[in-house]
Image (cartoon, rainbow, N blue to C red; front, side, top):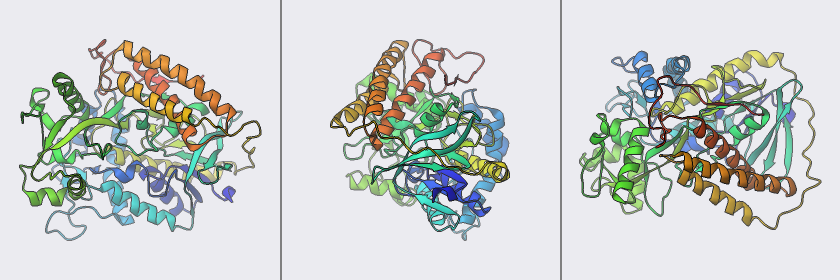
Amino acid sequence: MNSESEVLILGSGAAGLSAALRLAQNGHRVLVVSKGTLASGSTLWAQGGISAVLDENDSLESHVRDTLVAGAGLCDERAVRFTVERGPECIRWLIEQGVVFTQEEGEERGQRLHLTREGGHSHRRVVHAADATGHAVETTLASLAANHPNIRVREQSVAVNLIVDHAQRRVIGAYLLDRNSGRIDAVPAKAVILATGGANQVYLYSTNPHGASGDGIAMAWRAGCRVANMEFMQFHPTCLYHPQSRSFLISEALRGEGAVLKLPGGERFMPRFDPRAELAPRDIVARAIDHEIKRLGIRHVWLDISHKPADFVRSHFPSIHQHCLRLGIDITREPIPVVPAAHYTCGGVVTDLRGRTDVTGLYAAGEVACTGLHGANRIASNSLLECLAFAEAAAADLHAELPHLPGPRALEPWDASRVSDSDEDVVISHNWLELRTFMWDYVGIVRTTKRLLRAQHRVDLLKREIIEFYRHYRISPDLVELRNLVTVAELIVRSALTRRESRGLHYTLDHPQTDPVAQPTILTPG
């Protein structure tokens, strides 16, 4: 049945689902693959919103300028302009699909969207659905996809490898592992879109869901695609610090609406680090918090919005308010304990402005890709915008190209004849924890060459052990993800060792200067 699909989309977040719907609405047959349920992944948990120029006092030039400044000189201005210019249309498209965004008070639906401001932005330009924008976008698009006649959905499936015709350097399908049965299917397609998200589970502490294991980046690398800027892993400054809720994000929108960061004694500290204070870009705020935590030997700092009216806090941040209240924290009366945590992969698979990678028929959109938009640091709420803009670009390119691509063909089945069941799955869980721990300790917010070399040594040892395990035992979803994570860890460390300066999210004590000319870090397989 899989041969019926022209396009195989790996991932069901904003990038994957919007690409699927745009293709399906143009008459193309699509198969969407999700590691969990259809409405899962990082998009579901995105709180803040989507940046787009919709206010008459704002301008595209201002959005471009803010993005370039946050990217610390490394953004590709063509990619920035391409994305920013498509922002208003992407928001209109979402509204047409049925996504309900927060309106200005007293306005009729659709008359005037409420815009908030987040770190790095000079204007209010963040469209949101209260403090659960990702949930509104994801559930709406997932419902449409599940009921569209041209879209088929395969849930609880993990992509193991891309299938490439190396003679023609063209993707022809992928191997998919069914979580429930353990069966591995060879699924053919005319084209494949990688929409698998980022790689932030490579770190011990992350705001991302469990599945953010760098699958698309690792698969594309094995298929022969270049990757770029993998040293720029963004740490969100404010993750809730609580033993019962280790990955709950406290949206940047709180700081946009006046929340301030404080030390245990109540002192506000961000003005000492940057004139923009709490509204400085994320790399600056995360490093400032990390500095204060280490300087004072404390476990967290405080984020305080209790000086705002209680009704304002409850109406603007209902999800955060309720979540914290369940843990005994009333954010209308007391500050929130917060720490930085791995949040976003700014680098990824190299693409052009149509989402094309180095392999014919293989596209990438969203966090898995490196388009040049984010440079050395992603500005707040440009992530969902990138998902939407490049999913639209990839779908438009595919709409034109699909009639000229060869049809899906029969593929070699997965060969499991020389493997056996493992009775040592503890090796996987141990290696998973070891990898994420040393990446957190050695390749985190502040780096040194010595720490990076230690991480590289451990990556090499783990990689050999994982490859040996992969070759001899029947694979599992955990093993697939671990194999991808160690590949991504290797790419991050290699990229970080290559960059002998500090820029944006990559800060090293051995090279604290910033070079006069910014250059991307591009790694080529082979």
